[in-house]
Length: 157
View 1 (spheres, rainbow, N blue to C red):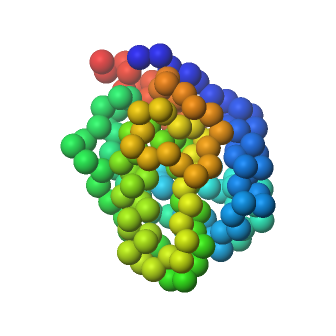
View 2: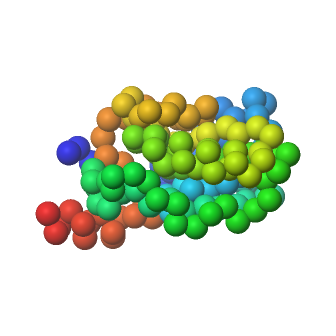
C-alpha cells in the first residue's frame, strides 16, 4: 500500500481549493462533518465559505489502513435540525463511498431540502462521486490529524 503523508499546510491549501470549487455553485445553510476525518475539513470549509452552522455525525467503517468492517456503522446520529435546509456533507476522502452513502441517507431522512457531498480526495473505485472534490488519488492518504493512530496501526502489522 502506497502512503501519502499530508501536512497541515497542504490540507489548508486543499481545503481552500475545495471551497473555491463550491463557492458560487452551492450555498449551504449548514455544513455537516462526518466525524472523525471530515470534521477538520468541515470546520475549515465553514471559515472559507462563511457558514456559521456546523453539525456532525459519526460513522465508523475503517478499523486500520485499508481494512473495513462489513458495513459502515452510524455511531452518533446527526446533531442538528436540517429540515428544509441546504446541507453540505463533508468528509476527508471518498474511498469506497459507503460512509458518504450512509451519511447522505441519514441526512435525507431528516428532511434536508438539498444535499451535496464534498471531500478533499476521491478514489476512482468509490461507489460515490462527491459533488465537489479536489484530487483523485489511488494512495492511502495519511492526514495530519491521524498520524499517530496510523503509525501505531501500521507498526502492529
